Length: 387
Ligand SMILES: [Zn+2]
Image (cartoon, rainbow, N blue to C red; front, side):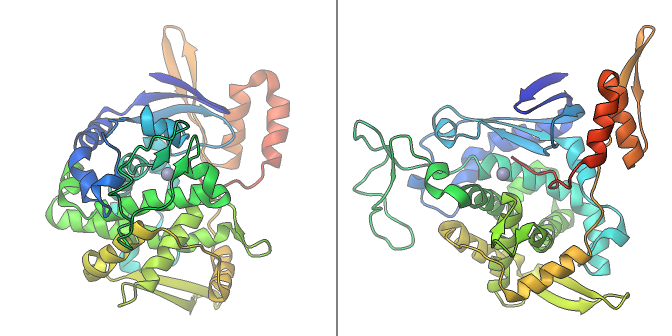
């Protein structure tokens, strides 16, 4: 049992040993996998700081939202020198995604079946890669206060232009302080792309127990999930202010754009009409082109990651369709425990608004009236996501 306090939240969880063991195996393979990323070795940290990666099943989470995983600390200057730690909240992931076919929007029937079957295993692979080798990879080129460089100024070249690199971070600057409003979307985009790119690796797939035809399905569903997520992400774009309200959603939309622009029929996006006569959309992915067209697009993009994104006209129309077909907001109804004699009992509630309110007022009986009033006013918040 583990208790943790991450401001402004706290949770109690139990370690999922099986999943943690697979993540530990990925950590142990990092030194072999990192050099396969499409940048020169000089762009990688001098020594990989072996992070701790644990999968937890949450018993109770108290805070304003429930994340699906946590990579701490969020300060990249500390990640660079001291290392970092990941936790994946496994049972949050398991309930966060639709497994009901009629609620799976924008996919072909056959893809819906595959999605339902392979969503969990493929997401486990993506999450491990995103957190560990995504956020965990890359080196910041820094000149410290004394004027010393942490890289060879006379030999490190930009892989795109072949020229010596001409700018770097100074003192305590990081990507967060330099890239301001797009910093987190940029970093999430990089982490998601590392996941897409390295999930094509047979070694990675076998760490998670996927071989042969099963491994192909995991790859396909992981990429399909990403392109669909890019489409769903439009919900989090505000056309009036031309701004994105959620870093992960902006990142996934950018990745969808990259894969659409890769062309050659890799991703097809069609505006259609639903059975109800109202606008709908259909997104498809050509699985035979993932390892060729898709891989090389992500490879180039990972090297670049310079794309700025705003929703263009067609995408604004699609955004209306996304909002029209939006699924009802998911609720996390948390169980409570109560001591009965010598033993502890789990108290479960129905998965509904009423169940959610019961769960809260029974947990906080002294404040039940106020808690109930607040819950009834709860605003729509973003879907759970990785930090
Ligand atoms: Zn992330």
